[in-house]
Image 1: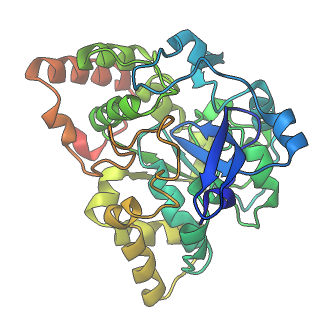
Image 2: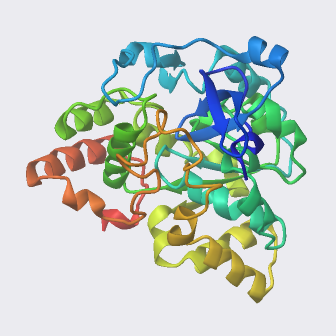
Length: 354
């Protein structure tokens, strides 16, 4: 797929000039990014380009140029920090007014908890094991974020059942969600690994604020001064009894341990079946190793000044327990104490707590 074939959400970023080597021709492209994720390229018409390009010349890569202040990078929505590069007043209005269908399938995560993985496995599970979409369509278009700018462009065009991802806490879902029969797969991950993954993501993503030292970033994370707030608040919000049997809880760690077993659980939850051959195909494709080489999923299509994979790959390690390579004994004790206090009384148990 060429750069001109990849589509970008309209209305957010800089004008780029991309030269095609086969022709001495320069294409003006519009660039826009979706947090943790959604980046697309397109070649719009001159009028569309003029209408949709926003001048944000103060946002630069980390290669020596000055970056915007953290306060300029985020907006505040119901107390949550959201990256301005992918969240606007229009996109959040779209979220609030979105009409959920009964057969919609939501994969909900706190950032860096397996969102990209769910974007890789849900489409083939919902299409009888067909891998075409995950091999030809960027993940931000095949399974878009409900709250981000790309949603209004692609969601209404997706065939049912639609697979949708979101980082939103339960209480900020659209009102139509609560009246629907739509199902939710909530993926949780050890917050220590979430933090480490987020720390490295900040190093390579020019649209995120500076982390400071690792210890300083831990303080930000624990105080909720990061995008989408506190991990514990997010996890607890989705343990709402009102959801009944509409929600399935899985963990990133379970997916690592036995992906096939988890996919079987998802299929049962969704009331679907796959042949053994088709399921084998989805399991094989959905390994971290294969995802890492899939250009439709690994963000290698994103320009380096936005996400610099040389500094840290977007799909970095895909393991559990990497936090042990970053936390001192003191930081571990501090982090654990805060999380345990915030989870007290919730009766939520995770594999990493044992």
